[in-house]
Length: 189
Image 1 (cartoon, rainbow, N blue to C red):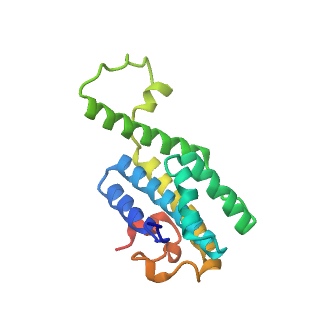
Image 2: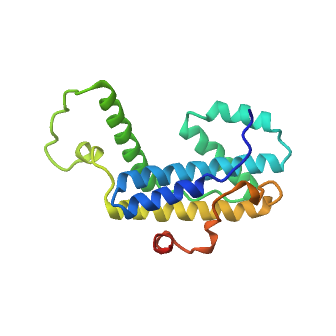
Image 3: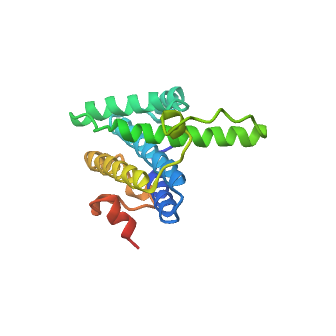
């Protein structure tokens, strides 16, 4: 069944906010990462709908990239560039944080499913091997939140050009465009 565009990123953004306020920084980064991915998917589906691409064609194309985040990101970057005339801003440091937290969570789920496994030898110091195993610190999670928030605001601004294809009735989350920063969002009731 073809999936209509809907805004799930608002729900995921709220989950990231709640996790950060609860002190669960790695969970916050994971939820914020999912919020950004959901916003990108929503954007791609809306732009395709607005250009007359059928839902079945969009679904078939999405199935080709569904399980590959790099392909999804590439598709989004090129479609955003084509649609707006500008490439979205990317921050390699934020991508590294996102990857580190995501891979740590996957390793934990795998080790939980397989049972105890031998630990890797201890790293002699605070080098990359040691950092790869730690979760996000609070300042990193907040910086990642600002990064995600700014990217979602840019996506929502670009979506204004496609209002007819992005029905407001399909969302339970208000746009974040009224808030200037993620810090404002954290302070909101």
